[in-house]
Image 1 (cartoon, rainbow, N blue to C red):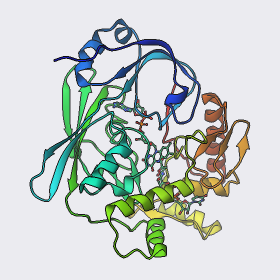
Image 2 (cartoon, rainbow, N blue to C red; image 1 turned 90 degrees about the horizontal axis):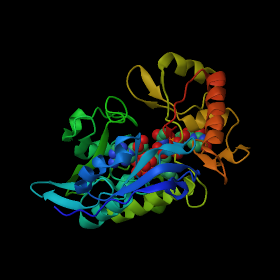
Image 3 (tube, protein in one colour; image 1 turned 45 degrees about the horizontal axis):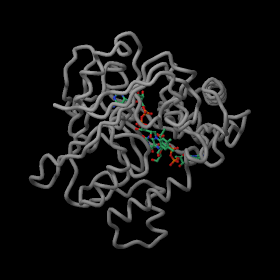
Image 4 (cartoon, protein in one colour; image 1 turned 120 degrees about the vertical axis):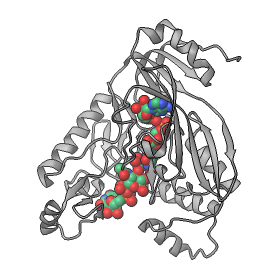
Length: 344
Ligand code: FAD
Ligand code: EPU
């Protein structure tokens, strides 16, 4: 089967390929446009003698410095309708498709279930890795299976959704399989019936405020994008990677202690023993909301988002993130962990 030859570039500047806008030089770089190019990729001396880093849209990575590595930018394209029987449609989507292009396509073509995930940057292939989520929906709710190339065995593997160990911002790809795969496609099971999930508080109140009675997927997508634009800085204007930290889970005892001194703390019950606390609330209450330190800071309206005011290095951002973690730990006894993948 014909495949376009791979072009390998040395000393590639990755500044425009990560949404933090961090300057980092990759020792070698190539763009992977199809599964057919994998064989050629694996035969290159650059692949054989270097550490490999797979890059999608670069919206959930922080490069600590330049990379003595072979950076492979995944651009595997294509959306294929695989099965239209019954109430659902199965769509197999190339891992390099831009996530929000896929959401738009689905909303416009009557494939429902991912409207709430509108506006999330990045690629389809990265979506299962941290189980992207927003406004009450997680991608695990609609994933049927994930296809990946196993770098250890050299085989293409198909993993059913139930075997992906999905959790909040978590999956098998962040743990057991970490660093050993290239996701090539993701299959989604979307509904033919529009059955919106509008329980998330800020979404519910926005719909009520607008007095919408004839909600459809297109309108829901617009509302979600509107809420996101009002809260999150655009990486085109201010470098960032979305939420820098995950929201932490704490036990009932710690919650009681927290409520003793802060009766207004918000939380979401996870199970009988645990609740999830907004890390944004914790950071705000350490006094670090909207604080700037050199070229780095917390965003003024969403302190969970660390921003690059221009010219920040990866190390500066890591140092600032450590300061936030230490303050939260000192004041609340709670550890907050990065959501962003720090690549050293
Ligand atoms: P990258 O940043 O390129 O990579 C992320 C990790 O996945 C890296 O470790 C990389 O090596 C690995 N990887 C990527 N593709 C592959 C592949 N094909 N095979 C193997 N490994 C791979 N996330 C949410 O969950 N919800 C949100 O609401 C949200 N909002 C955001 C808002 C903004 C403004 C920004 C900048 C980010 C936001 N994010 C959000 C985070 C980010 O968009 C997601 O994590 C997204 O899935 C990352 O996709 P990417 O292609 O950019 O991945
Ligand atoms: N809050 C504050 N102060 C602030 C902002 C928020 O106290 O300045 C508190 C409020 O109590 C608010 C709560 O934090 O109700 C939650 O805020 P928000 O709805 O903005 O959500 P979040 O928990 O900060 C999470 C995800 C986002 C996702 C939104 C919407 C994580 C780590 N982040 O943010 O995902 O878009 O919910 O569902 O779970 C990302 O992963 O990169 C990301 C942006």
